[in-house]
Image (tube, rainbow, N blue to C red; front, side, top):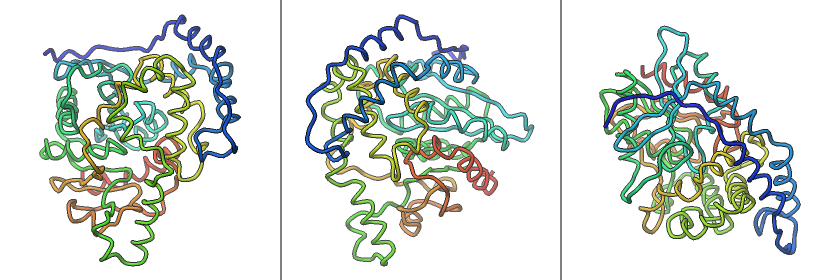
Length: 366
């Protein structure tokens, strides 16, 4: 293994863009089902309009130039090429922070968050998990959050950072605590967008009324009317992957459905071009199936992030998590309530608010 860090620049061949546009133009649309809501999937009119915008209105080259405005690099860790952003602040006292993205996302999740963080005194590192975008795909099974945590700690060591913070949401809410457990002498604090103290059925008998209301909200969000991506990714990613790799509309519909599920308010809470930039990145790099590995090891019911007690933790959004439950397995020093945002990927929606709240937390633990 070499410690070499190589500069990287995104440059999607024009032939790939032409192929995408051609496939979109030749979409073979299926017959419509009764009803025009989301109860049977993405509505036809919505899907047709979004696909047409992807073909004729969305400007990948503008997004590519935007991303190339960030310093990007590739380095080999644990036998895999890893792509990452490394954006340094002008503040001489800046605290390094690693942002761990979730599924089905990429470094694009933090494209609007990087500048607000550097302006608030953070050096920002955003690695892309193996199997997504320009990071190499896993060649064997057995991957988990702990392995990824060790890789990200090695990345920070390689960049020369001895003390740093970590942030995670979605799958990153598993990875960020695992980084602290792996290197508590290096990680100053763990900041989780949401995902600590989530109640389970065994907690119901001891719940207060407001806690029971939060539990009921979670049950609706995880209920039978939500597409279970855990099950799909665990048992059928290869099967569905053929369609995701061959049909851009199939891939777009999958991503659209999940971003709608992840929206507690509206799909449109996330900027459409930013959403399509992430979909395009997955499309051009054929990442839809290879990104599924975080779900391969699941058996039975999903287990919510437990966190850790090696270093202090904080959250952007506590609810629907319950603080007293989170404190069983975490040292909570910052519990966000009332922060703006209505989407699971709130960094894409409210980057300034996330940056400000992260500053509040890391000021307490640095």
